[in-house]
Amino acid sequence: MQIVTGSSTVYGIFGDPVAHSLSPLMHNAAFDHYAIDAVYVPFHVTADTLASAVASLKALDIKGVNITIPHKEAIIPLLDQVDPLAKQIGAVNTVVNNNGRLLGYNTDSSGFMRAATSDLGFSPQGKKVLLLGAGGACRAAVQALLAAEVEQITVANRNLHRAADLINTVATNTTKQQLVAVSYQSAEFLSTVATADLLVNTTSVGLHGESLNFLPLENIKGSALIFDMVYSKAGTALVQAARLRGLPSVDGLSLLAAQGEDAFFIWTGERLPHGFMRKQLFDYLG
Image 1: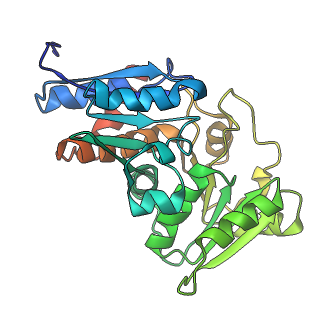
Image 2 (image 1 turned 120 degrees about the vertical axis):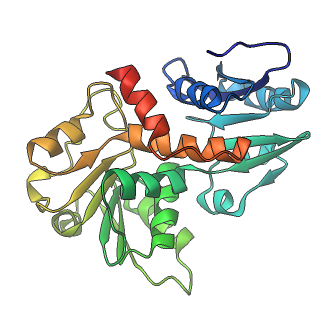
């Protein structure tokens, strides 16, 4: 059992909202597991108070924080240094206070791939992946998929220009994969749904129980895998619908746990067994 004292190291999470966050549960269990004298707490930080909250990390000697909605992009200019991968993604979700220098990282990318391979059994080589959305979560997934050398990545969005901008941002002269941008209203979207080996929802649709009414589940092939980055205690509408069709699927709890384990390693140098934080979440949620 953790006992917080005057010598305990403080970590936390910045977000708005943040009261619902399950990150304190995971990280405090991990500190307990390794008998580390530290505590992880949620900080409700609004857009207006982000700059002062970041400055407080130095003033209060808070050793590290996770960054969640809506601050992952806005925090970048407030940091002293940003890891190259986080720069490519354009979003930071983990900050380290290294003797007064604030360093930014992104563990959503590595966490996504670890969750997809370990919890879904996804084998990247030669596969076609369809991503719904074109925000920071999508960019993190695209970087992971590029590194894993999938065959094709399609980014679908309501706004075709936004999907195309994302593709243009990550494409280089040495990119081997086929990169495609489509809109939800296009015939290309329907054909991509039918051929995708992995379908990933990177949008926030489903956070409040709503369904992805633009996604024709009946078109998805029977061998496809479904990864919903949104999570819900009862299971998201997408995951529930996928399972009714016999499609292997996971929700954002797998990503939350995997990216949390990577953040914990950055802060402490201790590598948790994969699945440790996921077990804490499932035990808590029943």
